Figure (cartoon, rainbow over the protein chains, first blue to last red):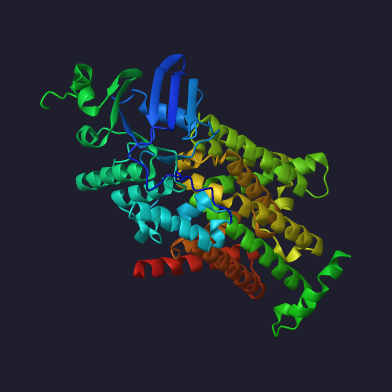
Length: 258
Length: 282
């Protein structure tokens, strides 16, 4: 049984809040669909330890941008990853929490099975080895979800499911964590807890976070940088600055926010 | 020659103090049931989880055309033309699904209607369809040593591939998005599974019957789903229900002089109802 290598940065624990050394660079990213530009001229730097929030209206290309980063769709331009030693590993570990996850309520699949399907060599139908169970427990512990390991995935609440999927995305610890509207189906207090957890984790493990969300109020508090997307990057910077931009205020009807 | 391989099996089962155990055809049929039922059960877990029941039904029905092609080609054993056609059909349905133009049940419905009609038209030329009704209900007791040997080899290959692809299929079923992000693309695994399913269903058809084979694929997994809390339990319960129903159905069909395949299905249905009661109680 071999697990993927644990990519926790070597300076874990003594690291300052941001190492600033490793960085993911998107350069001139463009995507066309049926001859129409869905994304154009996207230049973006994702620094480790930093939470970058992508906001924009529906159809602005947020999910498409994520697919480019994950290498799922053809695009023009380049995606580069540079680690702390300024090497360019071919495939950085990307943790991903997808949009709209839900599982069949009756599915006889436990949280542990979900981890085994992702990590294990032994087929999950023949049982899960001790080492995979330990790896799953470690991942779940990072998000305070270790009690859920033997629960069936279809019986988890929205908030529980998000913690499980985040724990899975953190196993192995990624270089980049990508979350696509992770909060749909989670109540307000669950959201606050989730963002706090996310803030804490990216400091502890020093990975870059790219978060797509509509939660402007929460993002204003938790994001380090905000990118307003409308096929191209309209504006970017500290959240407070971006949220003052007239184009952003108009898009989100932010007339009452001071 | 092949028959001699089974001599120890015959000797062991003959020692059982039951009337059915005195007959060579029953002892062979028992061995065939012990090989086929775990295989159908195991594949059934994925069929149920991935909602492929209609696809497997269509594969079974496509055997009509497979047999017809065998007749046209003058084959003595239509098994090869049946397997060939089932694989062709699997590729066609997979292509339809990936193209995305038609919803998968519409695509399968169309293909199934076409293949069943084509097969019946060819086989009924000259009013001779009655010769092929054996395929409809199957004949477990006509199985030969050579057939059992083929099933054994098939079983080994299918189980090996099934276990190899299992985690990939499971993750793709749970979340295609997570599977893609972890570079565990399931396209090849899904196609391989559909092909395995087509081959196993087709090979088991002559013994179980076109009309009931899909039930044997679906019922044990459906029953196990009512009991299991995780993937390993699901798999174990499915194989257990499948093997138990198979053995019980074979023996009951011997004493009641009924078709074996359909008898096994009725007993599996009984198991399913029991698990429903168990589930309602919990």
